[in-house]
Amino acid sequence: MRYMTIGLVGLLFLFLSSSAIADDAEKTLKSFGAFVVGGEWESKSTAGENVAHKYSWFGKEKFLRLSGTRDGKATDKIVVIGVDPKTKKVTIWDFSVQGVIVPTMTQKEDGIWNVEAAFTGNDGQNITWKGKYVRVGKDELHLESIEFIVGGKKGALPPTSVWKRNKS
Image (tube, rainbow, N blue to C red):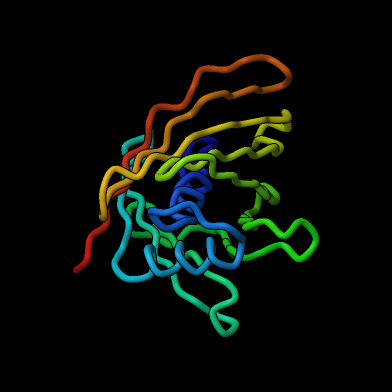
């Protein structure tokens, strides 16, 4: 479950920019939405579950909503992507029964996005995760974990997650 949350967060951030580095958060959000809205993004969880995400605009295209399924069943999450008015950064608000994860994202080079998230795991331990999203093509992206710290100790890195768009 922990890795699926990271995968969800990662997928969201991977697309938060166009192929050129966005110079501000609004442009980043718009280019992300232009890329991910339409079709369904599919992957496999580490437990072998089929995971799918769909994105849609709301609030006059100021926010994106992510809806997801796991093995065909709706997830118990609410995920909203937008520009945080305080930080002026594209932010993902990921709400679930386990709590809230609010990652931040930076982009230092074209097609690669760095993401950081700090949250409390299902077992109550503090978790810090750093990852890198690499756009592989128009309809594929990879999420690579760089650092995974659980309860102050380095943990095993989650495997690379591969997401592909199904346009049907």
